[in-house]
Image (cartoon, rainbow, N blue to C red; front, side):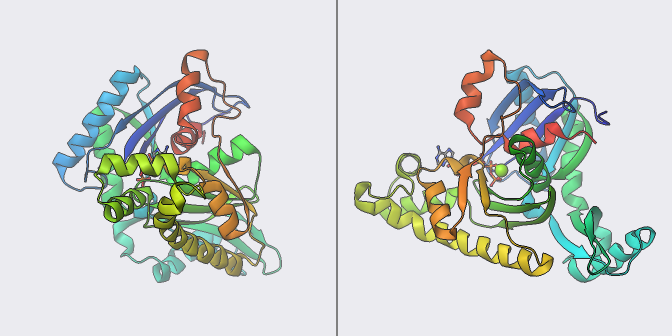
Amino acid sequence: MANLPDHVGIDFGTHSVKAVELSKISTDRPSLVNLGSQITPKGVINSEEKKDQKKLADVLKKLYDSSRIRNKNAVMALPEFSVFTRFLEFPGVKREELKDAVYFEAKQYIPMPLNEVQLSYVPIGFNAEKNAPRVLVVAAPRKVIDIYINIAMDVGLDLMAIETESVAVGRTMYKSTGKKNLVMLDFGANSTDMSILSEGYLVFSQSIAIGSDALTQAIMNKFGFQYQRAEEFKRNYGVAEGVLEGKIYGVLAPILESVMVEVRRGVEFYKNRTLSIAPSDYLLSGDGALLPGLTEYVSKSLGVQASVANPWRNISVDDKFKDIVEKSGPSYSIAIGLALKDE
Ligand SMILES: Nc1ncnc2c1ncn2[C@@H]1O[C@H](COP(=O)(O)OP(=O)(O)OP(=O)(O)O)[C@@H](O)[C@H]1O
Ligand SMILES: [Mg+2]
C-alpha cells in the first residue's frame, strides 16, 4: 500500500518547471493523469529573494491553470547542485547506533555547519566483509528547503515531501527499465547531474556545473550568432559526426568532453568507495539528452552502452497525451520519479 496519496511531482529546472500527476502509483502500471511545463524566468531558481520566489510560484500557478491540474498534493525536488550526498560505510556499527554514527561522521564531510542543513540518510544494504551498514547521507541547506516550502504555500499546495533530483530519477529509471545497476546522466540547462544506481539503491550523485546552455553559448561565441540561431544549430546538428564539415562538432565536443572527464572521475570515486564494478548501462535524461549524436558520443568516449531514457515505459498514457509524451522524450524523468514516490 502506498503511504503517500496520488500527487503531482514538480521539477524546478533553470530552463523549465515540469509537473506530472499520476494515479495508481503503487501498482505495476500507474496512469498519467496530467502533465505540463512552463519556462522558468531567469535567475529565480534557488533565489532567497522573496520576489523571485513569488515569480516561481506564479509560474507554477500558470502551469496548474494551463494544464488543468487540480490535485493539491505535491512532491518537489531540490536541485541537485544545492544538495550534498555522500556514500558512507560504518564497520562494526550496530543498527541502533547508526543514527549517532551518521551525525558524527557527517561533520567531517559536509561542507556546511550542521545546524544549517537538514541531514538525512538512506540505509543501502550491508557490506558483509567489513560487517558494515552502508548509507547514503544527504544534506540539504535549510535555506533552500525553505524556498520550496514558501512556494508551495503561495500556490496553496500541500507539500508532502521534498527529495533530491537524483533519488527521483533513480526511481523512474528503475521502474521503467527494471535495471538495478545504472549510471544516470541528466543533461539540464545549467548542470549535468550524474548518479549511480547499484542493486536498486542510489549510491552516488554529483552535479557537474556544465549544462546544455554552455553548448549554445559556445556556438554563439564561435560564430557570432544570436541565441536563437545558436540554439537551432545545437538542436539540429549537435555532436552528430560528419555534418557541416564537423564545424559544430568541433565546438561542442570539447565541452562535452569536460563533462565526460567529471563522469569518469565520479565512476572512479564510486569504484574506490564501494569496491564494486561500475555499471555499464548509461541512461541519459533531461532535455539536453535530445542533442543529436549524444548517445553515440557518450558511448564512445566512456566505452559504455548509453541510451536515451524512456521514463514513460510502464506508465499508462491516454491517447490525448500521446503526442506530448512522445515529443518530450526523457524530459519529464524527474517529475515522473517525484510523482511515483509512494512512501
Ligand atoms: N532538442 C534538443 N536538443 C538539444 N538540446 C535541447 C533540446 N531541447 C532542449 N534542449 C536543451 O536542454 C536544456 C534544458 O534542459 P532541461 O529542461 O532538462 O533543463 P532544466 O531541468 O530546466 O535545467 P537544470 O536541470 O540544469 O536546472 C537547454 O539547454 C536546452 O537548450
Ligand atoms: Mg533539470
